[in-house]
Length: 280
Image 1 (cartoon, rainbow, N blue to C red):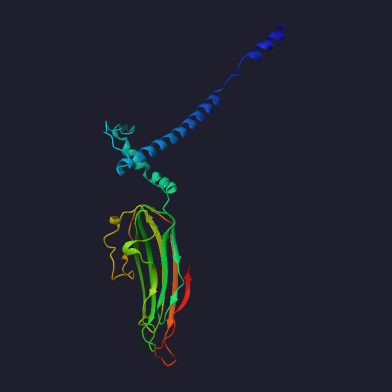
Image 2: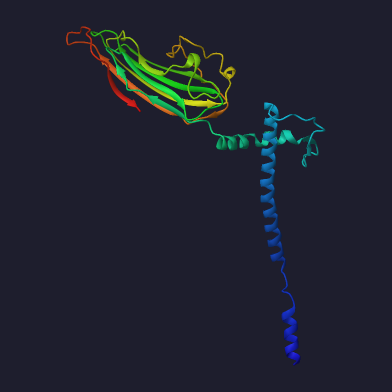
């Protein structure tokens, strides 16, 4: 009877906790609170940034500022503006999140079949269009133009040249295609026969749409009828423009054509231009 009572007393006592178990439980608790706290901090920073953008855009009325939010640096003991720290530390992350949830409209290139003329004449048109209405911006295309020419039939190849430039099409807010003076298709080639008797021209270009970019943000060196480029009436420059805003995925198109307008006696004749390769 005494032994049964002793056993019952021992079984009713709660199990003893070890220091290792307590340390593990505290560590996991801190980890949980740390993860939750990081999520709340991120939400708070994103919310603050969104409200600031509403005030700047004029959508939400601005209220009077009672006082700056400050934070103390534990290393130096000095106080700084907390909002500035949040903005500077989270700019890259917020911009990345914004591009994920608010991507630029997809750029579409609608190309026609190349139209070949004679002795270097070529016309291949691509019309730009957005998948949906945008906030306004530019289609910027980087063009690489390479030529290999033979001026006269009875002489060897005399010229090889390359040129790289950038051209722009303006898309107005709530528009889906270039408008006004930029409502022209991208045309690769030449409108008239080439002065060289033989030759080849290779053009590859990459286009991207930059959404939410104002017309005033286009660099001043991008001008119409730029003599240094082959862009014609489009605004163009030899320098690559650095623009903000959301950027669409790039579109590549490429064409190579050649001509041989010489007969067996070394005299110039008329022959059609041939398309060697193109994408798409």
